[in-house]
Amino acid sequence: MQILAKSKKNKCFSTDLLLKVCNIIVKMFVKNGRINYSEFDDTKQAVIEKYLSKKSKIESAYNGTAKAETYLSAVIYRMVLETIRGNNSKLKRMINSFEDVDNYSTEKSIDPEQQLLIKNEIVFLQRVMLTLGNKRHQIELYLKYYLGIKLIITDLRIYVPNTVLSDVFNLLKENKLLKKQEKILNLCKIQNIIESKTVKPDAVRMYLNKNIEQIINRLNGNGRAFYTKDSFAVLFELLCDSEKEIKQALKVSNF
Image (cartoon, rainbow, N blue to C red; front, top):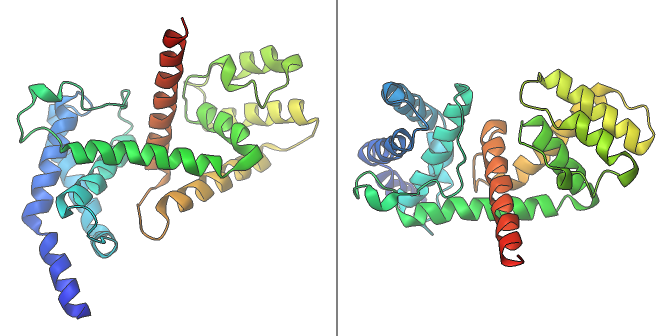
């Protein structure tokens, strides 16, 4: 019976299906301007190689609750994002990344189920962040700063006391051009200011890495996903964008 089940899984994930899904999703990124047309073939090849290196693990995690094509699309989508970040390409804002989908042909557009999967991943990350408890606001602030996400003063309010809010914001508001070591040093400075401690930069770096690993482990669960630090960073950016949209919508509705 196990051999038969494995055989059925193998049939679900044919080479033709892999090539088809990969082609559609990479084309979508080209169409949306996230990948240059000249990079199409190289990106597609890199994603296929990445998939084949994890083929056994990915296919064994498939439980049949979604269509094989939908499941494969979610996996390939994450891998394209990882590849983009690995190549240091500039990521555009990705929430609702299928805007203008009505202008695409069926072949070039993505299944609505795929769009729902991405939104579900954002919601799942939001739930994982809630499990961090009292340290959540500190970790979210550290992540935004470390990943180069633009900070606004309200991002600091819960973790940072009002007495030093302005000083800390001025220290952290510029985070795009700094090296990672410089960012860790600044995070160390604010932690020492807020908590009246003499924490070393290495301790802050280890604390941040430990929590990132913890979040990724919870996201991946028992083979539910295959996030790396790069793809987690993309998902966290998506979460921040979605929360920003919600806040803006609330401001408009309360106007």
